[in-house]
Length: 223
Image (cartoon, rainbow, N blue to C red; front, top):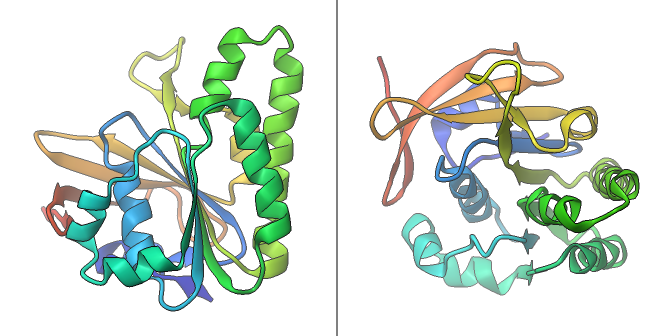
């Protein structure tokens, strides 16, 4: 079983949509359109509840109205958590562990790395911060696998010191290990973006689609 991305051509790329028992991570630079994928997945989910963890203040009701005509109904069954510190993010994950049940159909984390990155900048115990990130990812994986709830997560990137033209997802091997599907969003020419499968259990890595952000969501760019 898969859950629709909310966009036909992205569903086609992913052979039906997001898998319902794993973490899917969408990563890319600021302004690439990552949050749009979260909103479109919300809009496409019927009946079940949604848990949305917004660590960056990226969620916009005005934008959600544009991509979801029935936005009021979706918002009524969405629980928002808005941590502003890494400790609050840990509390959000504890809440998730206790509260998420079969009534939920989607968990969104936008983004996993924002507060983690800030904590790394002020903490003297980097090893412990990385360990906690691993525990968060393990918890999300447990929820996804046991309750068959897809976890959609966004992540930021940093430049590769050895190859300045290449970017890597923050969290490194920890993120790569726990994410069973990874999609990279890149800015291309003008307003065009590229969505590439970097990791997947059953789909060829390197498959991609081109798109642009429009008022109703995103649209495919061919050719």
